[in-house]
Length: 260
Image 1 (cartoon, rainbow, N blue to C red):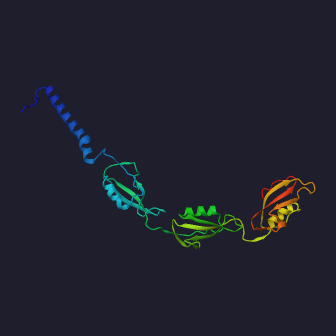
Image 2 (spheres, one colour):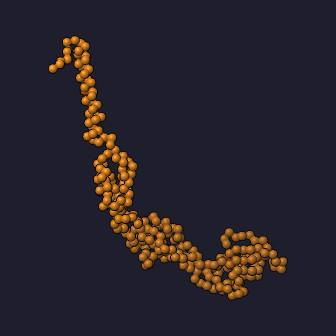
Image 3 (cartoon, rainbow, N blue to C red):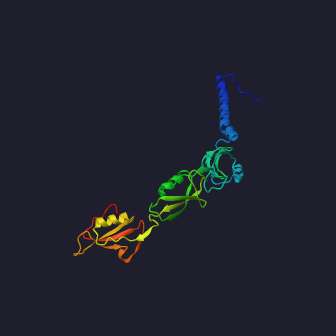
């Protein structure tokens, strides 16, 4: 066997250099060859998008990609299929190692019950915001004769009127009866022809009617501000419903009333 001479100083330096080189080679090989192979270091897996995937297919899908899962939470989502993925961590597209556990949130089979709020006497807009804030939805809107325009008159669930506080499944649709701004009462149109405009307005509003369009006309035989025509026409015995409007034709210039 060939031996390395150590008789001279140069031989010792060569011998030491070889040992140092061998040690460095072993060190680098351990960290850059052995460790990456043994720990899969650098072999990242892209996290797939699991949204809306069912629990039945989830395990096989992740096994094929060397990943695992754990259910971290369950929540109710309206119109979502039961036991399907609604959220996950890490997010889709993240890089992870093989065998990484993906935490998922599943949709529940049944909706939790919540107390029905009181919507009557609220405006439709307020009722809609109220329902959405607690996880309910607007169903069918039915406009019915009532002078309270856009005000909720009744609330229904599954075709039956529901009282405040009654339990209702989260995500349910609530049907509403809403006032159309017109009452049920029908009566003969009041006659305001030949009246001054101010008196005509008072009579119309006192009859639970609204002032419609006011049109300026010329009539030298009538005093300025006198009503010369109205629609609907009272002289014909026309009838009107509470909350409807009456248009007026008045002599001379007219200033529009902001409270018409």
